[in-house]
Length: 121
Image (cartoon, rainbow, N blue to C red; front, side, top):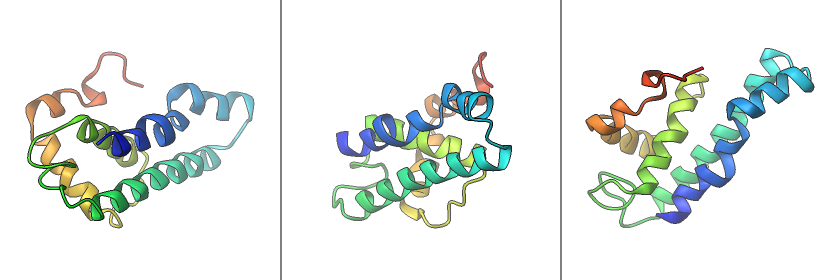
């Protein structure tokens, strides 16, 4: 579970947060297309790593590990949510998307969606 969670928390997600996106645009002067390519690259790399771990994890069930959500599922959702926002292709990640859909059907996950937060960008 920790390995799955850390893919997002320590690897992919920190590279696409608003602070980094602003740096890419404001300081490095990347075009919108270049910034989007950066975001999609790092989100895709994280999703592929999660997909691979889920495929090799015999305890993967409805969720990343078994039939109850864990911190791994929270982190998976926070990897897929921006991937959807930034139009990343998701067809290559069927296990990830299965877990994602299971999670967002739970009210607590749905209510935590970034678009429902007062400080959304």
